[in-house]
Image (cartoon, rainbow, N blue to C red; front, side):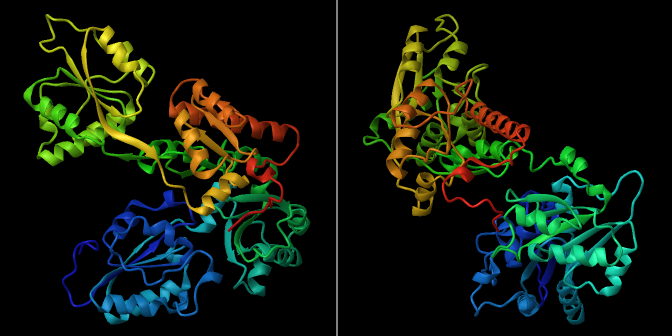
Length: 549
C-alpha cells in the first residue's frame, strides 16, 4: 500500500515523521512527500513551523502552538494528549502526519501512539528523522567517533538513574547528553561523582542546527564557570534543550578546526533585503548559504499602467509580426506581458519567430517558466549596458524587421533605448507596469530597522534606499550598509548612511558575496585579537549577548 495514496478504507492512516533537530533543510525527501499529502498535521510545537510549509494550505493543524511552550493556551491539548488527536483523525478516515522533533524512534510517547494504532488496526508508517543527539554535534563540529572506534553512549539526563551515571562514569566512551542549559552543570557533576575526571573535555550546544546555534567548550569541572562567564547563566531561558558531548573527541583544538557551521561568514546575521519575496528568492538562498537569516521587505509595489492601450497595441503587434526582437529588462516585465497574454488567451507560442532578450539570469528564469527560452542573455554584466554589448546591430540583409518591443517600468532609464537606436534599431518603448512606493512593513520590522535589530541591509538601487527610508526609517548606525554600485552608495550617503560594503560588479549575487567577504574579515579580525565573535547588531546599546530561543 502506498502511504501517500488516497485512502478509501473506513479508517485513515498515520505517518510518524521525524522533523530533525531544527534546520528545515534536514527534512528527508520522504518526509516532504508525506507532508504534501496530509489531511491533518499534528506536530511538536518546536517543529511546527519547519513542517507546515510543506503541507497543503487546507491541512488541519489541531496543535496551533508556537515553539515557546509557555505561550501555549490552556485550552490547547498538550503533547501528552496528541495520541487522542491522532486516533480521532485516523478513525475519521484522514491521512495524519504526526511530526516530532528529531527521530520518532527515540520518542517514548510516539511509541505509545504507534501501539495504539496497531491495537485498532490503523495503518501507519514511520519516516525516520535526524536525531538531535546526532545532528547537533555534527553541526557543532564535534565528531562522535574517529578511526580508533571509541564507543558512543547516548543519555537523557532527565530520565537517567544512578546506574546509568555509574556506567558512564566508569567508561571512557564519548557521552552524548541530552539535557537543559541550567542542568548541564548538574549532569557534569554526576559524571565526575561517578568517576570521570574533572578535566574531561565537554562541549555544550544550544539551538543546534539553527542560525541561533551557539557552542561553548569547557571541561566537566569548569562548565558552570564557563557558562556564567559567557553570561548565559543564570537566565530565564535556562530551560532550553542542549546537547552536551563529553570525551576526548570534543576537545577544543579539534572543534576549532571542525566548526564548519558557526564559522560561516554571516552566521546568524539578520540581513534586510529590500525586495519582494519573488525578486529576492535566489539572493536569499545565497545569503542562507553564508549562514545569514534574510528578511525580505518590499520597497516598491507594481501596478498596471494608467493607460493600457499602448501595451495592448504592442502585444497585438507581437502576434502580427511587427517586431524582430522583444527585450525584457526585469522579472516584472515578463510578468506584465504574461498577464496580458493570458488576458487575450495567448501563450508562449505567440513568441514563435521573434527573438527574445533577457537582461539577466533571473529574468531568463522567469521567461523559461513561461515556456520561452531567451535567445540573448548578457555574457558579461547583467544590466542594460551588458545587454547592449552583446546586442547585434541592425542588418537590413539578415533582419527582415527593424523594430524592437521594449516593455518596461515607467521609471526606467533611457540607456537601453539610446543604445538600440545607435545600433540601428527602431524601438517601441512601452510602459508595461508602474512602480510605486510599497506600504510600510509591520511595526516590529520598522523598529528593528531603526533600532539596530538588523545586522546588514543590501541596497540594490538608489530607489531602494529612498523607498526604504521613506516607508520604514533610516537603518541604525550599527547596521552594515552594502550597496550594489557607486550611484546607490551616493544615494545612501545623501541619506546619512555610512556605506561599509560595495559590490565589485552591479550584480545582486556579487553584492551578497562582498557582504560575506566583509563578514569573514570581521570574524577573522575578532579571532586574531582574541575577542568574541559578535554580530553587528550585538554592538547596539542595551543589546543582550545571549542565545535566544
